[in-house]
Length: 175
Image (cartoon, rainbow, N blue to C red; front, side, top):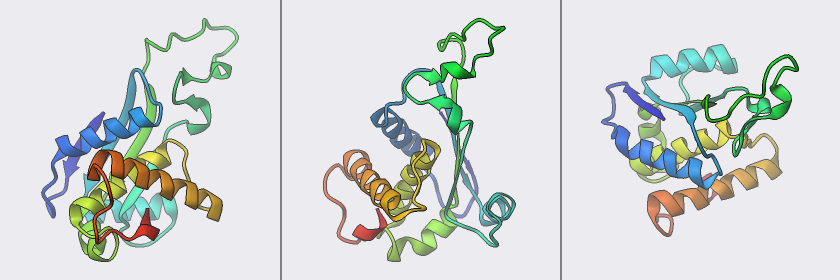
């Protein structure tokens, strides 16, 4: 797990977010040697990523970049079919499972927090969990997927961030 604060608009407690990500990964069945990066970046950086990879102008709150999502089994490591016939099977203990990157923009989170999750800390928690779920294969392009992903976000936030019920300001339709 690599968590880095590469911005200066908002004070970020990298240990707090690393702990949340670790708990989410374990809850989602990720075991063993894995690599996931969570980067907190400025608006200029996330706007450049948003344009390059999503084709959208301007900054956004969170982007997720799964690595080889179609070839990864989060519980057991690389899917056996990815091993070439002329090579010995890979030992999952020898190589990390590369999950991907989650990029969060705290400045955007700060602007939308009051109308979204309620507080900046709750907004950052939602964005971190949302990004990790995307890296693990969740999506919300279709209404059915959205229901499943938001339900899982809420369950994870209740278990590992709020330690119980959602705060009064948290909009239920957002998780």
